[in-house]
Image (cartoon, rainbow, N blue to C red):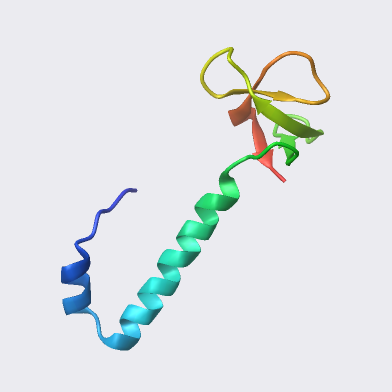
Amino acid sequence: MRVELDMDQVKKALSKEEMIIFNVLLGKVDDYKESLIIKQGDKIRRKGDGRLFTYAGKADAGFNRGYVEEMCVPVYLPDFEKE
């Protein structure tokens, strides 16, 4: 779900305390989004069998493809989850 908010309307609708809580929640969402980004050296687990791999970088072999140190061929990244 994607929602865009007009911050002027939000400020008018919320009290000072509610605005503080709203900003904390926005920060948590940003932190969560950042935690989903895979960086070189991160451990990723294959969903199919639970085996752990080390992410090595993006592959030029197409969309959502990357390399892991333990394999010589590109892998399909949606088949993995960040550990």
